[in-house]
Image (cartoon, rainbow, N blue to C red; front, side, top):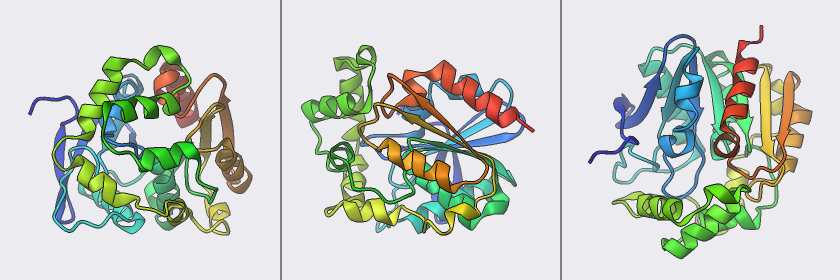
Length: 273
């Protein structure tokens, strides 16, 4: 199968992880969100070539997503995803990374910073989960997706503020990705009802988050209908060395709707001493 979403492969525990690897220098690890048919390429394809001008940029498909192996009987839990990320960092010999987490990936990045602080240099959280909140209509719709072109188009309307990037071609591409062999089967197994449980399972104990001493950049779209902006305000209040940037005229896809500004923001933050 020929697609830019399939890149490199490396053993992470008992399965192989699909990953992208751009540029050279200090490593930045990008972790995607949890939408149907998502992959690291779908989340970060516009960002990786730009961000890799001054550093090494890696992005992985988490277990159950994209083109990482789907072993029979796989469990989709935070503990499993945390282990996969650590196994990847160790297998690649990265030592310590800057972590950039989108939505679900933000919750994972927070968990890594709490549980493996020595593996993290700086933390970027974008439309991040990781604290408790009442599940939104948008997130419930994302996790409850059943495959159809109509349903995918409705989800895209929730994800993005910019109407120009929402079109039938994008909906068709994302729909077709969501029905590839194994994709919907693993996705539907991840977040069964009651879905509020999964919001809470991805949250760290709020007493532990102030223990994060890494410099953190927190980013949110003001018009985000999937993850409420209050999550980023909460994280900003809990993490001592934090900066907060809110994009107006922006939904849940900051890195897609404001790619150049997003990359510039990351570059400036990661370069700070």
